[in-house]
Image 1 (cartoon, rainbow, N blue to C red):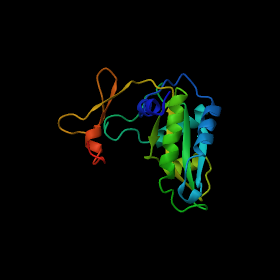
Image 2 (cartoon, helix red, strand yellow):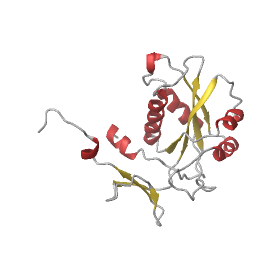
Image 3 (tube, rainbow, N blue to C red):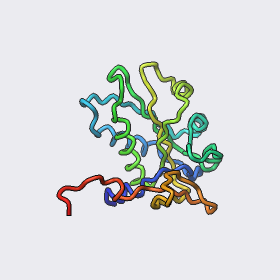
Image 4 (cartoon, one colour):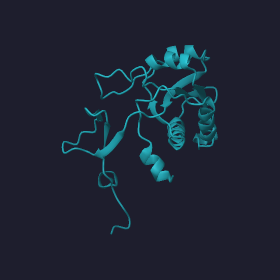
Length: 195
């Protein structure tokens, strides 16, 4: 699979086949890959928590916000929930802020997940206090993002923005999730030399 194919297939997934577990080793491999990404000043301040334990996954699930535009949806139902999580954490003894390191790491992990046949959702709306207590996380660590992972159980359709320009994603009656994306002509401001 080419990098472009991985990027195009790397859609936010919010429904999973909960009957299919993920080997914890797969998530560890994804973290091992992420440790090679560039970091600001090469400080490498990110740390990771990995779990595929069903009991821990059940504790983590209600601590997450799932889809801001889907106001009447509290997240995936039982049977469609993630079967693994990677929590990206900042070690504040190494750096006070993560810069953009956690974004680079999260996207790298998600691309690797797609390559493994997984799907996921990068979540920043997190009850950090409660999540930290689940893992007995010392105060020097700040939870940045949670990556919810599993075997995808929902089709995601990428389509052009509608005529009203709305960027809001939505789920159709057929269960497919629709994500409007701006076209290249809208995001490319200049090109030199011009044709």
